[in-house]
Image (tube, rainbow, N blue to C red):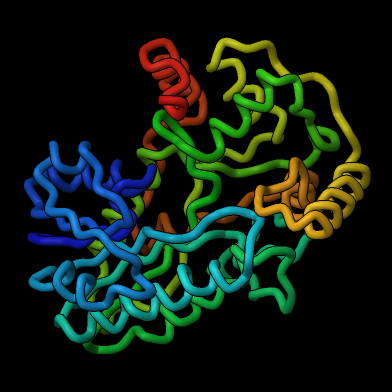
Length: 337
């Protein structure tokens, strides 16, 4: 890799990926809605715009690049389907077309394991798991549509690979860690169900490793092109262990109180209904999707990523929690800054 574009370069995964690329001496362009001082300090050329609308800016950002990491997405479990479709599907289509027009030969797409989630347990599933016929919310629905498009675009000009990292976390996270810690501090965090349901996550450094490995091995026409891979730490744990690992890293007492999966789902139904009735834009405290995610198993067979990408997690869950604790001691609640 000599020159790359990272969409969503200012986000959690994006900035960690950019740092690693710059450490290797790679020239990096970043495309996102806002300017980030951290990217400027890394010597990254920034392009600001909306991937679904600003195709001329995107074309300028892609020019001369040999690899594109398409990380940008609209994440979340609540909101208007049209907004998710515009960001995740139209935006991805524009990135794919920009790659073809600029002669980019490799694209690594950040997808999500939720593209295969049908509301039931996922225990040791691999890439043969089908896309569901129905989704509980707009994010996985639009990510699934975008992933299928990325895979279909793979040909002898443009090699594409889709990675499905599950619950990325670590220092600097703006989603999972803040959500857990803020709710724990407010006394509003509960464990759902028992400890019989295991969950996979992936520490941020391991996720970056997977993206770089995919880019290095990808080429038009080879076996990777058009494929999708689950990416995790390979250490499934009870959700309570994951949540309390984060909570205790923040110096808080572990969560003990539990509710049943059925009660959590019923609360999600009621809160979603109330939010829609009141025309609320803000995500309710509980949704059906979140309840289903918390109450079911989610762990994946990553042997394909190990075999095809040479991926091997280097930071264990225990080491990750230790690094997170160090970050809290050093930086405090970084998302409140």
